[in-house]
Structures are given as structure tokens and as C-alpha cells.
Length: 222
Image (cartoon, rainbow, N blue to C red; front, side):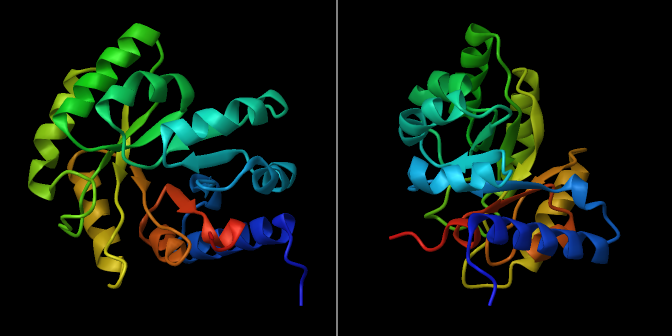
């Protein structure tokens, strides 16, 4: 059996992305792998950095602020993406710390982010999160509310890169990914942040441009 190292895990994920992209007649280089490092400390993250991974995702502003400044001091080219829910009162911190924000999901957050970006003169790309399975416990705007929220974000000057979603865990992800891809096309967007450890290959075949992989790279969280 191959050794279970950061190198081998990262290589395996890239191979699987490449196979899925090739199946869909896509260029694997058009898919960005985001290593979801939430709850993992620097000692778990450094081996992946040393293996060549440069794009990481965090769920919480506070957690990212506590561990990433030091990690970034010793590594060039690291990108940090916020993939978890963002409170409006943390918008300034998020704009200062993150290189992309995947969870824009309500009008008040659009306003807070626009103000923070104007103040910082920094405009990280944003994804509008859609509650694609209409699940009350999940973040994301309702499908019906997407056009209005997107129009507000564009009017406020947010650089909207695409859409993001987390399908219901217990169901086949493919129809939800297909719906998100259609919504993006309808709105003239090319970015699709979708797919995690269990379903990223399906997401890639349906058009994902960003896949968010944690467990398959870091192992199960305690």
C-alpha cells in the first residue's frame, strides 16, 4: 500500500480531479483545489504546504487570524479562502485576511462587505452562496432570491466570481450541482464553488471551478 503522506494524498486528489476533468472534456488546470484546513493546526497544514498546496479554506475569521499570519510569513503565494458563514460585523476582518469569500448570502452582508472593501481598498473575489437544497439549517440565499442579491452585490461593487453551494448530505449531489451550474449560466457567471471530499469528482464533471476538499487531504477531524 502507498504511504499515507501529505504528498501522496495531494497527488491522489490532483489525479482524481484530472481524470474527472478529462472525462468532461475540461482542462484540469481550470479546477482550483481548496484544501479545507478548518480545525487543523499549523503542524497539520505545513506538510501540505511543503507538498506544494497553496490554496486553503477556513470557516471562521477568528481561527484563520490566529494561525495563518505566521504560516504566511514562511510561505509565499498562499491564498486563503473563507468558506464558512460570515457575520456582518466581521466583514472588515474578512476583507483584510482572505483572498476570496465564498459565503455571501444576504443583503446585510453585501452592504458590510462593500463598505469594508471601500475602506480597505481591497476587493477579494466573492461567491454568492445559494441554499441549493432549501435546507433551513444551512446558509445561503434562496434560489428565488438569487437574482436580487446578485444585482445588489454587483451594484455595490463586489467582484462576484460565481456561485457556491453545499448540497444535502444524504442525497445524490449531481442534480444540485447541475442546478447551480444552470443558475450560474443564467446569471452570466463562470465560477462554481462546489464539491467536497465525497463528491468533488462529480462536481468537476458538472463544471466546478473550485472544489473544497478537507477530509481527503487531512483525514477525519476529531
